[in-house]
Image (cartoon, rainbow, N blue to C red; front, top):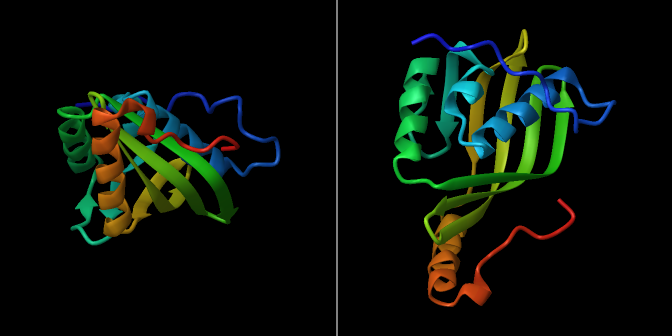
Length: 157
């Protein structure tokens, strides 16, 4: 299956933002749209993707399979960047991710490390705490039962 060239970078990026950080921001925005093909356009053919503590997935086609599996149950995704910093080809994000499955919203803290070369992400590594993910699941389940406690990302992204 052919993957299109990456979509144009979003206009909301700061003028001083590095091209590498802009690629990461656009990649995460594509995931928020649940547009897997667009997101894959930002990945190198030989990308290495790791959710730390789980096995690394190698290659764009294998990442496609993982993301398609995610879409079998996810109805929404949000990645709110609290901080994004680039040092050469390495981009770090501190963010809150939220996965929605119907009325269930699981929200948790993530640090992402991306390596960008020639406009494509070659390494995507997310670090998170399973206790925090579990707490997000419990809060999300409580929000299904009592909607007024449903977690939202704090203002001031």
